[in-house]
Length: 218
Image (tube, rainbow, N blue to C red; front, side, top):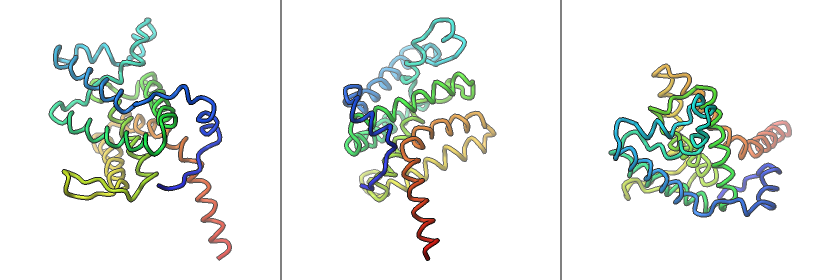
């Protein structure tokens, strides 16, 4: 695993607020998603999904639960749901093992706050997007940064390094909104990079400064 220089505020939180961490967070998120799928399956046509989405208009009317329940909005393609949840669960477990529950919890909370902020800016429609899918993508980016060369065996056969999986997902998240002219969705994706930048920005900056110093000396 790469040695990452994390920001001081994150180290301070990890040292002083470990009791705030959510143990087994990957399992919790998967269970919440499964419950969201059951709600959508029992009552089709997005009835419950609309009740879960963090629409600002309804939140300001007192439906505060919406800023929490959007996590249960399932992946839109139910045929791929199990495969997607299985894929992201493996990544989240590996990230928890690499980081510990505290770091993973803080990383998730920042992504959650970014999603709520995006909803209040009205830059994304949750009828067509499962917010947790994008949050889980940010977990993949974090794990690929920590273990870029670690491999996942696709379909138990084809070995693919985490860094290539992350690049492929990043490409889809950025290219698809541009092709569809959905710039609001692109803004939402950028907002979800906030947790990644807050966690890894300092390390990238240090590495950048070191590289500049090397070139100056050369």
